[in-house]
Image 1: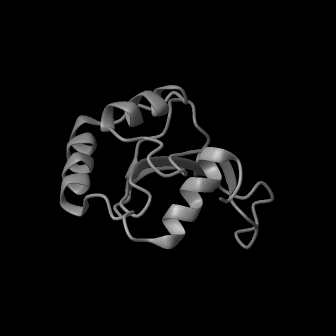
Image 2: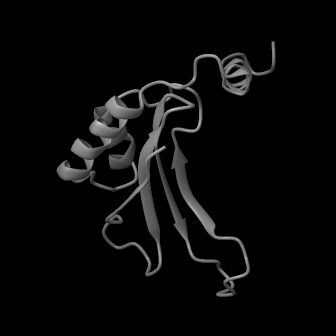
Length: 114
């Protein structure tokens, strides 16, 4: 799994972290953004702004990842897009032969386990 921090959307609050990457076991690119805890207490949970690419094969290309990010006002830097493509090519699809991945896929595609 790769993971890279990218610039936030314009106007984002201080402390927001936007991350993208390639998840080989789920065979998908992902993106997420979290704000610091609302209370300011670092022991509290961060606040999810968005998280895409959580289902097997949900975001199969860097181009689709860029589109998903654009819906949240975030631009995928070209250099990061290139690195993510390299990550995907290097790590490949590791979902095959993984019972957990198969279970997650069946749950997300049909609404429940098979």
